[in-house]
Image 1 (tube, rainbow, N blue to C red):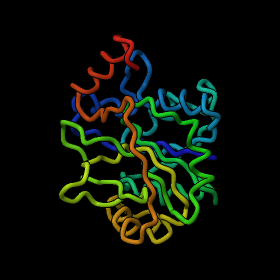
Image 2: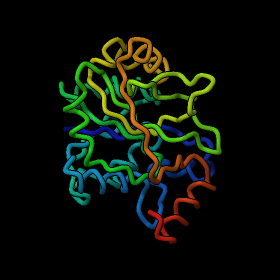
Image 3: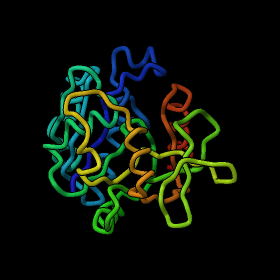
Image 4: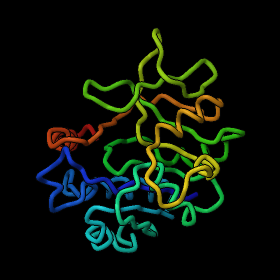
Length: 230
């Protein structure tokens, strides 16, 4: 299967670090954030990678090249201006092919087992996607979601265990078929449509996961490595 790593964001909350360095190239333990994903994908046998970029994208291509140093093959989807998450995926669909593919946020730090992704892709059934979720963090994240009794993603309601989308997913290309190529589009509206039609299965992940959205959490990820927690 193929995997896409999202790397087009500006990283406003990480300024001034991201004024001269794209957020996915910020280092944790001497390795770029995105490099940890590439290593783990390669170890899982997922070696065909698509990376989108916008802000300082040339630096990403220069640093990662064709991916051979990480044991993967990288193709790039360049955006003149960031198209947001769903818009970036829709633009990259010609590079991703006709089969289900994985998508991973470039600014998370996690030990989620990427070796599970091919099996998830094979077992989607009639679902259009599979979302990995984590327990709601103690810092602001995206819209609160939940998992119903049938293993499907839903909006969080009173009495539900509040969860956050972890930025790891598997999708069928058809999930993005209604999006116009080259237009910015957020991911939540696509989630909403998919959840209304019960087309998104989900799982709860309790391992290491960190949204590296601030300088403090970048330092936290580094501390986790030094403490042997990652």
